[in-house]
Image 1: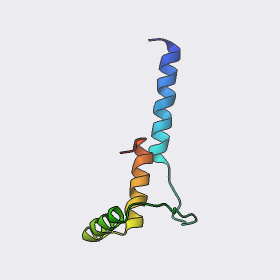
Image 2: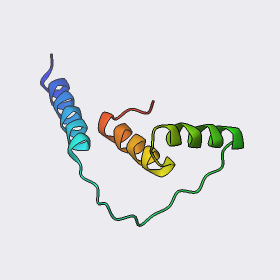
Image 3: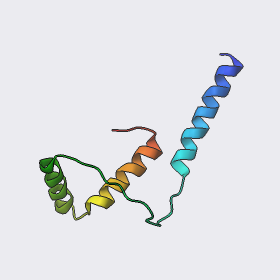
Image 4: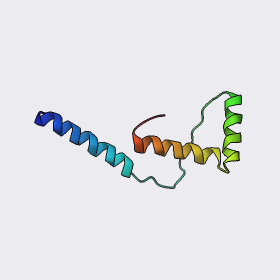
Length: 73
């Protein structure tokens, strides 16, 4: 493999590792406001309630998971 290719792979790996290690403040200084289907919202609220979690905490965990894995599922 070429040196340039290996350097690009190394940079990509370092960037992915940096995203996994990033720490976010607990300061809640921003809001999301988006529209969704009322049935979807209610089903999600019920799922969160059944798992004793708030909808906002579940969405925040999902966001962190996406950032750390560099994937949106």
